Image (cartoon, rainbow over all chains, first blue to last red):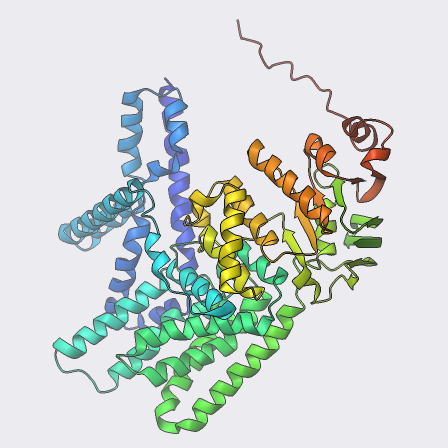
Length: 339
Length: 245
């Protein structure tokens, strides 16, 4: 028995864990896509669509049960009675970020919106618990990500896996899927819309170009020990990134999306090689918004928009810039040591 | 073989490694001993070219440290283990085989043997982030061994492993050393060092305090360590075991 003071201390600790969990989503502030949404939000009606997509993607990771922060072994060894655990359980429900969102929606929008958020959070949490209880299920689907042949192929698979463990590709996928569905079955669409959306989709993935090595966490140190040149490591990662971009922009505007993404890569190598920021799984990729993110966003839209009007010269220029950046930062990586 | 002359590393005013010199013969197992923070890992990082020395020089198998060709002939078990969360145990070895230019058949055969010897077969398809510390260490060790290196640098290879695997690794290290591979390892498990190493280099506060063949030690290894490197803490935690009346 721990008494009221013990229970309050435990709930306070869980509250701290919950608050830190929410803070970990602060990586969204370093997102190129967030910059775009913030810009679009100047006209609130236009931002609703992007806001809904972000909320839907965030629902899974935000609906984590705070009680999961207590290790199983602690739960069974701490001198806390069943009724005290029940009190902690009830208290912890109010500490869940989804509960806060639900309450906020009830107060500001209406009870239906709040109920949808809470039901969605509960469903997401139920699925998460189910997945945890199925041995080997968690992340097992990532095993099906194929590896092209050779060393470059093995690193490409690693890059795809790393990217798929962040939220960015899912936002890109939902944006691309929703636009494609609207093009096929929706009402009349502005002729420029697929082109613009291809750039927005590429932008949603573009923060990855700033964390090409950071995404491997401690594993990035392994590249320093391997007999493989820096430009080949970056090439593998770039090809993996471009392949993923190509996959999501193909129904929209392939050329604009891929060439725009290539411009983001040419500018992102510097940040990737010079400042390796480790990424947290199942969060948005955390890059640097100023100045790299802003420059990348402008370049991606400028280059992507020019592909149709200027044609081959812009494509050739962008490919040349990418190749120079690849070679230069590969050379820098070859001279790099651990700190 | 490893030649190390006046190797130093300073961070501002702090001297992590203060002009260390020692040699390790080809086919010998040398153990670097010292307390936490003595500079062992820093030394290993410098010898493998991962960290730039601020003074001195070193060669490994005839190549100057920092020569890119060195990466092809040394195997490293780093302090951080340097593993990828998004790969399974087996995929780490596949990646290593591909990067070191091994054929698929060789990679597959060696992988199967390494996983068997290290008792890691059951974890082949487990993602690294789901592995225990021991499994991670074995994976990193298997990556060091897979390309058949001429020199091995192992940072705490026995720590965190079960006794059977630790003993297996000891036997393997003795076997590969007998075939001419030079091994430099760090460890805190003196009983294991006593049985695996030919030579010990004791480090304290960044400097060498003893460099000797194990066979030439005037006293037992443990005794020498406590004498030259550090003494045990003698403070009594008098509140432990006392019940409030």
